[in-house]
Amino acid sequence: SEKAVNVALRTQQVIAHETGVANTIDPLGGSFYVEWLTNEMEKRAYDIFKQIDNFGGVIKAIEAGYFQREIAESAFRYQREIDEQKRIIVGVNEYQQAEPITIPILQMDPDGERRQIARLAELRQTRDNERVGATLSALRAAARGTVNTMPFILDAVKAYATLQEITDVFREVFGVYQEPVIV
Image (tube, rainbow, N blue to C red; front, side):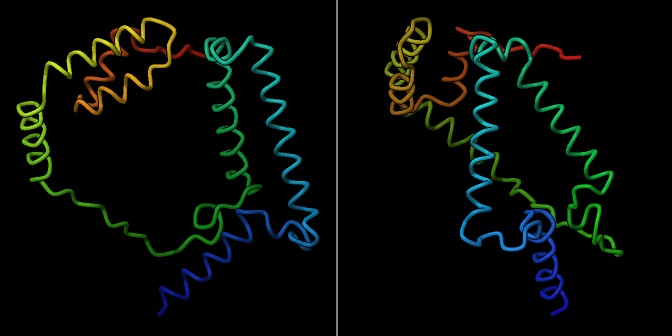
């Protein structure tokens, strides 16, 4: 069909333009190119780790806005490359289709929310709420200390504590993180 031909063509265009596989004569020839890519990725990752260490660790880097700034700068560079046609994104800045594309939107079952609320209410009625409370208290104490909280989270899950109940414990102990504003 015409749609199948179009999908096959777009797939080839994505592979050629978006993966960079066409940027070398023989990308798998003797694995030299793949080896170079691996070494380059390792070097760049190591450079990032060194920068994080220079901040004094991950927490200090977060507080200094390092990750937020890196993500923002990377997104800006990426978009500029697309806008200037230095990075080809098939269907966005190259090989666009003239006719409008209709994207089918997933329609949720309107009864689904009601069923889930009913299941949650039944769970809260039938579970051992004293056990849930005890596991959440143990989790709270662990979060205030220096121990690994994962075993306490798993105990709470096994007691049928909800995700909200578990995350509420962490919000109570640690508060809600506010990202620093980076200009």
